Image (cartoon, rainbow, N blue to C red; front, side, top):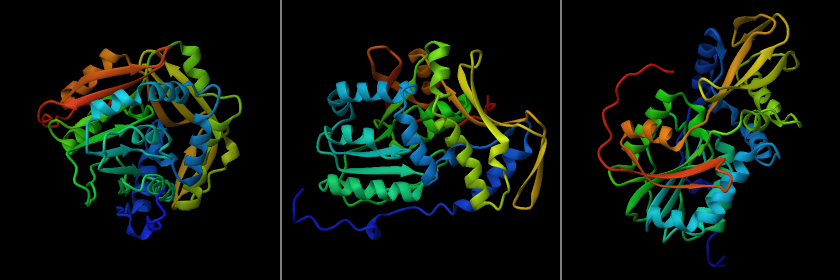
Length: 339
């Protein structure tokens, strides 16, 4: 690094204020009033949750990270060519941005990098590290819930086009209709000719999938239970964490993993003064993790205006990274059932 580069200052990072507590409380209360009860997986990622997810990514059972890393190590140069020169790279759900470094290392004269994450502390820490590692790339983080529309920050760098990087398999956490809404949102954000580099988890044996979400060390269980810890801390709740067990199962018909926190007794829980009764064995749905075929994902993305240009997979075809381009203005959003 050039010794003349000035020290990085968090004060000059443009961020968007989430005013998150009110939204968090509203979403939690609304979810617990439903049957079955549910909690939005986007709230997993407080600082502790982000640390636990990083630990999950290193587990033997969690094939997704290894498979995606293999793809990035093998094909990042090809991806950089597909993405193009002088890009504004926007990353949805940046987390620790480990895989992003593999991309930033090979991008052709990138103009700026915009990490977007809901966990502000984790986001700013990562942004500082990246600004020091890549002093020639403008780093402009945005603290936002990417499942909702948000504005990109003003940047000083001149860029030729916008591309979104959506690594992991986060798109699989959404139902088909919600995923299509996000893909339509991204298409509107990058505009005609803009790109999307996205990770998807592919179909494979049920046993392999279920092991990945039920690790022997219990890290995924701790990750899910940390959401209850966060609700207690931030929303004046009194969940007894030990009275909930974690379970995940693969729903073959819906082609998705369904994750739950199960009440192991009849109990009462209060959140911000509102009481909720749980029966013994009653679940709280915490997350979906959909699995795709390439054709199935193409059919999901096409109504949002996307066309697949290139697909890369690992040697075992466990995972895929897909590059898509908006070939026309994305169609107007039509209402559809959330399934």
